Amino acid sequence: MSTLSNRINNLSESATIKMAKLGRELAAKGVDVISLSFGEPDFHTPEHIKEAAKQAMDKNMTYYTPVAGYPDLRKAVVAKLKNENGLDYDFSEIVVSTGAKQAIANAVLCLVNPGEEVIIPTPYWVSYSEVVKLAEGVSVFINTTVEQNFKITPEQLEAAITPKTKLFMFSSPCNPTGSVYSKDELEGLAKVFEKNPHVYILSDEIYEHINYVDKHESIAQFDYIKDRVVIINGWSKAFAMTGWRIGYTASNKEIATACDKMQGQVTSGTCSITQRAGVAAYEGGLESVLEMKAAFKKRRDIVYKLLSEIDGLKVNLPDGAFYFFPDVTSFFGKSYNGQTIKDADELSIFLLEEAHVATVGGDSFGDPKSIRLSYAAAEDKLIEAVRRIKEALGKLV
Image (cartoon, rainbow, N blue to C red; front, side):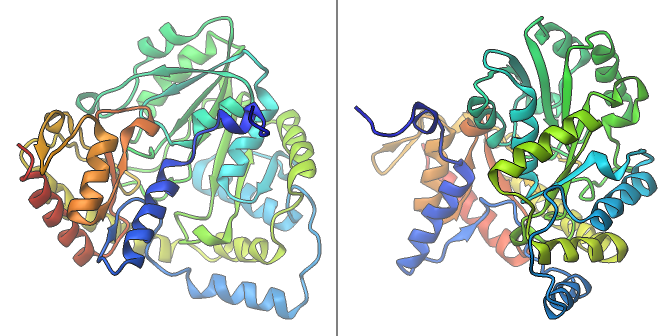
């Protein structure tokens, strides 16, 4: 009998972290591995943000912080939401956490009771369904395809809602597909939620600024459902601050107070130095963000052209984030050197071992037909990685 709890035994290891670990282990043996498994910008944190952190240390801002974050940081978030998104929040409705991942966990654990249903469109970010497990909720998946650009329809949403539905979770721009919902598409979903007042909406907007079409649209803009929307956002992707670990929720006061209470028993306030950096990021403008976005768009176009030239891959052009999520089912059942590919996870392992390129199989994203490739790496690395992938896939017969 296991000494560990059912809670941890039922929890899956993060697939992205697992593949990154396998890639590092292979690299440690002297193999030249190109990692496309992690969603991490290869840019450095902008200098003015790092300088703010240095100044904070010099000023000895090294003590415990309020659980929900420094008031001036939360007010900076309020100003950002107003100026960039046209959304009105009070700073008491903002809770700053140790990364957007903790913000998601806070919200789900505060909203979902055992047995309640959480609707998640597939493909989805790997941790969504696992956090629902921790809350003892029931994940209900709405499947999408590359042909529909991995976006659900209002009809699909309506069909999935039951009296037991408590929460709907999605991201736009989406990890892992890069899909971006337009204002009209979001309004179609919002109309469904308007008819179902028992359903809350978790809107993961961490890739907001990596959006190649129009401006970012938040589902919280529709006043008739805004009070039931929990926005998840942070600094990691837009400002190349993945290691700083800082994110936040914007929600109604009741949910914000609950998230504050939850966080107070788990981690308390996030790092004081990181918070000072967060203020500088939001007050320092978007020049560096736009430069990174332009670079990502160029990389996207390069990789799309190269992937489109590989026979057997079914790939669409993503409108945001920095991922491709090609359908790889044409390679299932094919073999090389005694190894037969049964699914996307096995293909991902094959690419690591044969091409020395780390990707992530789609099963943990809720879509076993596809693999995820991040193009957050340098252009020369991306070109070489896709060349290796094409060569390796060509060996499968």
